[in-house]
Image (cartoon, rainbow, N blue to C red; front, side, top):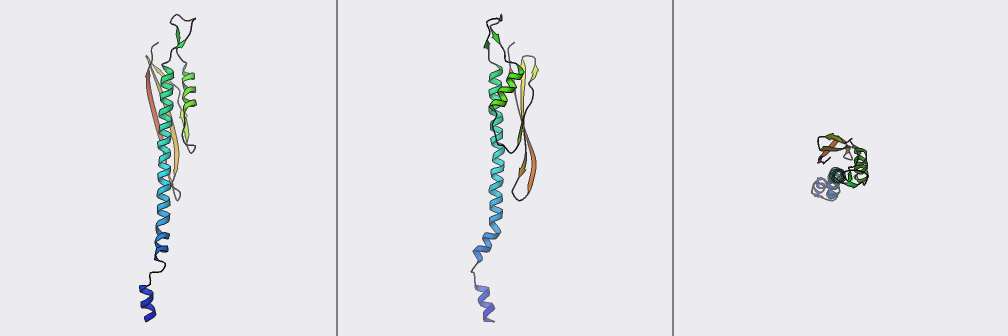
Length: 138
């Protein structure tokens, strides 16, 4: 009986058991935080590209053959500018939508889609959409 009493009071190896239980949870949590930070990076890249596209849409490109002296950028040029300035993580996909024209108004839209992966299990598919409206003078 003394053997079982000694075995019940022995704490050798308890730290290894605690580590084996808590380490997978901790690693998954840290990896999940990293995955979520990728969404913030994509959002920053979309906002930057939208800002650059909006700025480019309002530019007056000098043209001496025109009576107004200015040429406004075409919608294709604005979309190309957004694509050129877009940055973000490679795990998802960006979609730059065509410029929507209104009366003295252009709407720029970018969408980012990513399937989340939390190391031990697959997460949901996240879609971020950002838009910016730009007033232009024709």
